[in-house]
Image 1 (cartoon, rainbow, N blue to C red):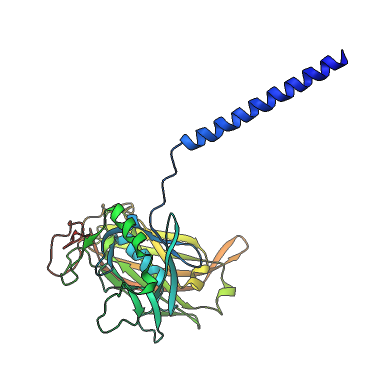
Image 2: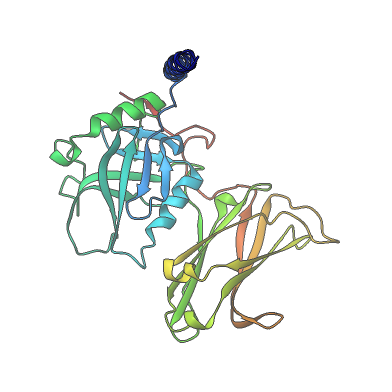
Length: 338
């Protein structure tokens, strides 16, 4: 009887092991039959933090021969905000695809006296175009030398751009109606002994119903940082000869923005105050105040308040630009590229 029980136990052990093996095989088969995870698009990232700067989905057109590309408005503003020219001589970025790093590049402050090998990313004036060159400063020709060994991996970039359908030629000699980044720039203001602040509004973003945008820049502030716990903003917008009024308050902003040198402020100033009419396209007026606060028992108090005077801003997307092609064209002057 004992021998029968032992044989039965061995039989059950072999059967269960075979069943487990078959289940494992079926699991592997199911994994191989499952759809592959889509490859990530081309991604440009901060080399140190991994912050995504923009992707191929943000590119409207990329001129391969000139190595010039055109970004969507918000992506262009994000890229410009990352540069922080009053703080950095240069910043490092990486371009990646599903296979890994394609190249390591740099943005270099245009006032820098240092020299760098490429790829170098440069903003081209007021329009949302950017150039990739092989050195800084540029040579006499002012164009990219793509035979340079640092561009040996560019075939992968070309393949990714072609797959995304963004290879187009760009005529940089045109004046692009509707594309110019329309800035309202305020000068540096002193806030305490060692902190300066300035503001830029972007008129292109003051479209009724969408997020408006302002960049608040900070320089210095090492002495004041230990005294404050957070930052708040007060924004007032009026339009239509004062018939539209709105107030926006943003609280709890980390003091890290002082160290970073910039705070990207996205806000929706379209909810009218009681008794005022809805906003309509036209000339508006905006004022902004920066409040540096510390925590006290029962709440917080403002240690320093900096008020920026009212400035005009166009509401509704009307952009002051020179003659050119219609603004609704996907990329003005763009034609299919190779």
